Length: 227
Image (cartoon, rainbow, N blue to C red):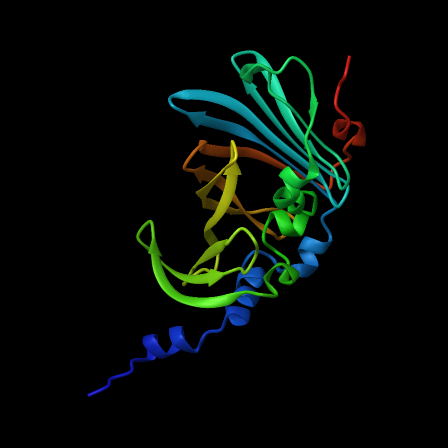
């Protein structure tokens, strides 16, 4: 005998479009996200017991910069629509090095505020609903995103917040699976909701302490210091 409960029906009746629309509404709606032209997130990370400073700065569609400070050494990654650079002195680099765009093409979403925060419907054109799964004891809707990196997103079935993204990345010429978890969600003054904690399998925890939205950013930060 087949018994269908209201909870089962509501889960199976959902489509990828339904879930994505509710997710975007839950994190503030596209109107609020469209009003953001710059975002700077400042915090700390921890990996293997070592704490480091972490800042990411984005000017919408113009540039993205990630700064990391470890043991008195400051490194960064810069991504613009046409060029990208890295400088990690704690990994042996002595000067900024240009990064081939084919190596960072999967990170170009970082220069778009909405894409970086998974707040754009355009990102989900090929999305497919893939059922329900449990992530960190939370029941989640599973959505396959249909990109070349085989990404899968998991949305909390109660809040519709994005709690995990899994995708394939290339490291040292080898393809690996990487998962990033999001938690500690906080509503900002402008009305958008942002996860204040990110956890990756390879980089440990990153905890943001301060988020600055629509404050002036000197776009020179997207040019590497070659002195």
